[in-house]
Image (cartoon, rainbow, N blue to C red):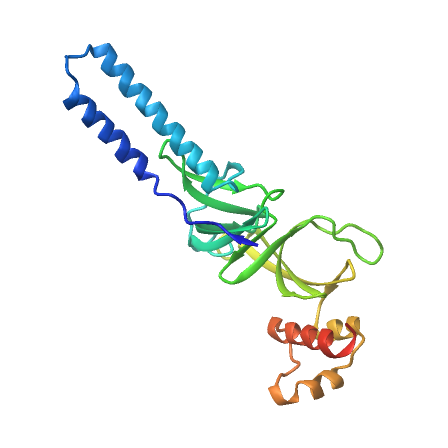
Length: 255
């Protein structure tokens, strides 16, 4: 993948516009009519907006989507993180380091905060058909639309966090939905996480560590011996442990 160049300084166009007005005001040999001055200024503004718009298209080609309403309650929200985050967007094989991103888990949309060519503040829900992958706080999110289980039934499409990305893939599906809070009688966002193993094009829901081991065809004893020096404990479910197991499985056992 390629790394996108840093964005151009759009204020350069403003500076050029102001300079052109200054030059016109002081260098004219004869007084100009009000209408001529007005037309000149309007044409200069139009050219500047056009230049900025072209710059935006070149520097931010991934901005394809629609306006998105933001939730401003930092304690009750549908986002992966409430604060705007720096991240990376992968668009047509090019990596774009981008600031001001939010992942709306409820809507399953990546939100980009930007200024329009009219210098208005805007939040855009980027189209998942163009943004197939992005990275926030080191976590990789990838859009899957053709997942099927072993019975051939299509599974939910959307952004999955890729916890382990080898021949086998460990995927996390995050959800947030509004539920009635019995204590306050207000609607509050409730979070849930589901874990999946993607193997040979087949996705399987994993409920526990033993379920993962069973799916791989290995025993807890085998893994305990393999990871004895690392002191890993098979209690509950831990993404790091699961990733290490898949890495070991691919390297030493089956793949």
